[in-house]
Image (cartoon, rainbow, N blue to C red; front, side):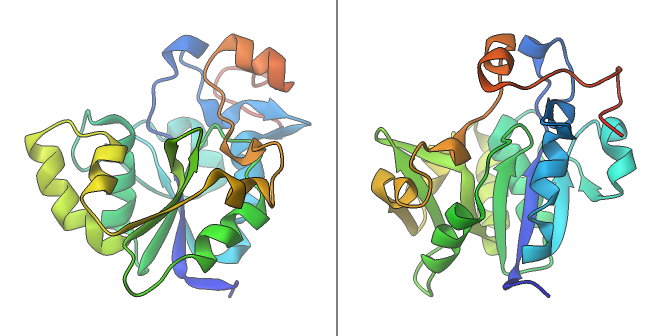
Length: 207
């Protein structure tokens, strides 16, 4: 058991990657490994790994427990809500499937900031909350499910209604000076700038 036995590592892969021709973003390749593989390297730290994917077929070879959005069509908030509802642990650490550079030290900062009076912990960068590099109490699933069924809230909006501990940018810079942990891949320009490549063939990553 890793150092966080009360936490599920949830990789959110719900998006359709329209700006990347629909390629499953977790299969984009950096230095010979799919981004999802890089994220799975952190799995041993946690009790369990969970993949949230509405179209899980491209990721089948990873053999992960996979769930779809419980409230469809809500984007990232729906993905995190699905992870919270499916978790078997008290806490859920959520990251996006297109984040190649998540540092274990950044995860540790979030873990250490949890507490009995806290429902969620996230970094703020340039004044904005980073909700897809954050840890949440699984018990938020029920109240957030009700909100998602009625409305289209942002994750920032959802966090505003709970006991969230928002860490300053300096807390991330202290362990990740270039803030690479928060970097995600959204466009072909991002691919080129970050040195990522397309999967070797449609629906397949590196072997």
